[in-house]
Length: 473
Image (cartoon, rainbow, N blue to C red; front, top):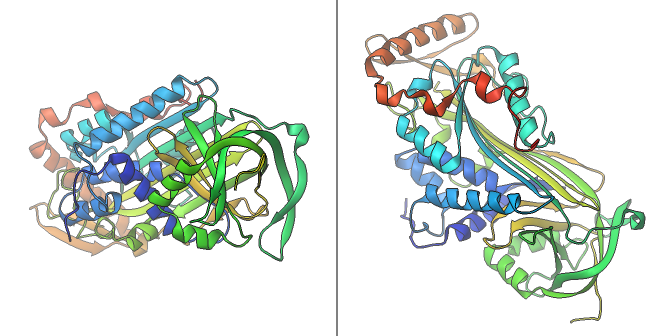
């Protein structure tokens, strides 16, 4: 694999990744995603990988070049800056949370250096879970996600997803709620036509206001655009409307960090008559398929995945791999502002021309971007094309039966055996594996790597009755 050039801005890399992941996504109707959430999860994974597994992640995240300096520190600086701006802005809420949910009988395999760096740079805590108690554990994790997304994302992990083969779930949550700097008057919201294509239209609630916005026309993308700032002028939503009713797919093909940057740079403050639909989009995306399409394959393959910087391996590389990767996001836009939330999770198993007034009428499919203005970081990105649909789900299959999985066992003498475990064999195999791992940990585990200072037990980390989420504060 070709090496990646250096000296590229970290924020430029994130913008490039944002459009790469969006362009690779099949978008039949409405869609919303948080590139920032996905990138944060991938950087956390990359920190624990080595070899080809690391190089593939690096090439997707930073395909046009590596930023100077430490990548994880760059994330921390951006993360802290975003939260500081939100705290200083009345009426704005921004919550970013990273969490490892780890099988409690495997936590000592997590390397201390990895845990420390994850905590310092990503604010990532460790919660100990019993994945064998599937209903209880699934409910605990889902409640944690629900609270940290302002209760916008519920039941993220479906029934049947967890079992005793689960080693860890890496979860990143982003929640944003902002009020428009110039709000719409609900009394002026009326039913108007929204053209899904040249021949089909539907009636939907359309908001209206006349105010001063940054707006303009872009000939390269053949579109109009308007930027709606949220209170505080730190974060904004950019609406990009093709000139043609069916022009969104063609415009998306031309969209890139450079064309988007040039578009925003050309916008000028002017009196604008703005018509925008109220909308809500909920999307759940199979990241595994998308990442494989972008060239990230190694981490998903047993016997090949190399997480040697994350865990102390019992044997050769590949005894830990990513089985599933999901991303769910929700956005709601109304007269007051917008609410957006996203969660990304990776499931790890054992191998197992300027007029006086600019008219902007978003009455046909358009693209929207919620971004941090100073850094250019894209928090949320999506398209709105069908008022009749609010949910998008491209996940064809969310779980695999135990009989279809392969469990890697570690023999008492340290050799490997890979066996297909079916039916009643699963319980015996798992108990044997636990006993062997427990015995080995007594030999390999060092006191300096078993510090509990960065590990929260499930009662401390997950118990919502005793701990307020950032959203609730």
